[in-house]
Length: 115
Length: 111
Picture 1 (tube, each protein chain N blue to C red):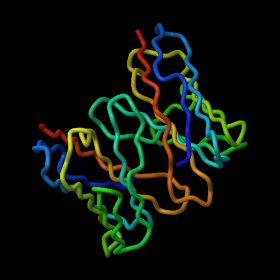
Picture 2: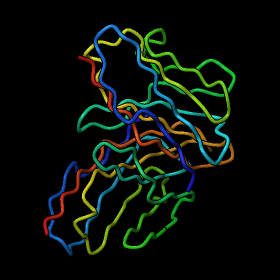
Picture 3: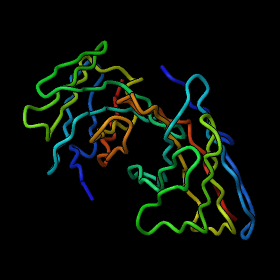
Picture 4: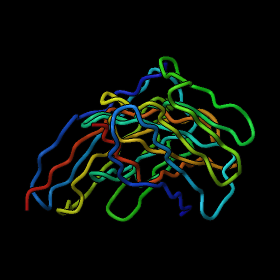
């Protein structure tokens, strides 16, 4: 199956700092990437949808100025959590697809802990 | 937005038993997907269903796309300890579009 690489797998940072998470499609060109957030024992909640070369579409309640998404190429999307606070601690997961695929493939996730 | 109701929320079974879980939706989906998630990992695709009524197997896993296009089930036969994890159903409207996830089924298999 298609491979989606996500880095880092785990990050611990101080409150007020910014953290960047990368999502790469390794063996295909991803026209669309999705960013999810998952709290313990809960389902995945879609944060935003990003299409290569255009602005991301954010879900209701997700602050676009806090969660900056860049999809500069067909193989890379980044999520930057700006001025992170403890309540931003969560598991962040990206997924990627091609326009002609019904399937979505997921990265391995990033556990963010803000102290 | 769209909601998927997934049940049961959790299951505790003995090794060798069969397992069944299902998802229902108030809306129609064109694709149903079943994922498994291990702790600290992203979801891994198990089975994808594209047509109403479709029954698809992947080893000991079998899933069906409901006739009404509003439901799907996943069966696991002869469970083994490595089946432990959280299973999510997901519905998709059009190709490559966003997924709507169920709440997940936490499966525990006792040796």
